[in-house]
Length: 54
Image 1 (cartoon, rainbow, N blue to C red):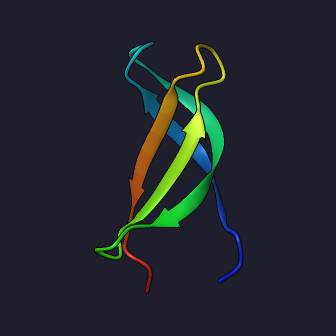
Image 2: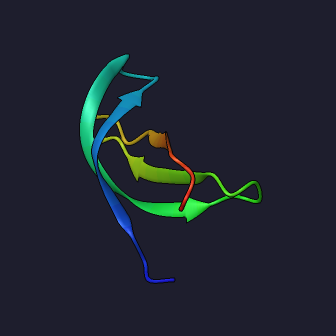
C-alpha cells in the first residue's frame, strides 16, 4: 500500500480549535483509517478518524 496523506481539518484538544493540517494515514488492527498530524500552532499530536478502507 502506498503512503497516503490526509489534508484537512483536525481538532486540537490543547488549543480547543479546528486547525488545517496534513498528516499520514495509518490503519489500525480493526481496519479503521487514522490520520495523524501535528498542530501548526502548539505542536500537539492531532488525530482524525477516517472511514474504513474499501
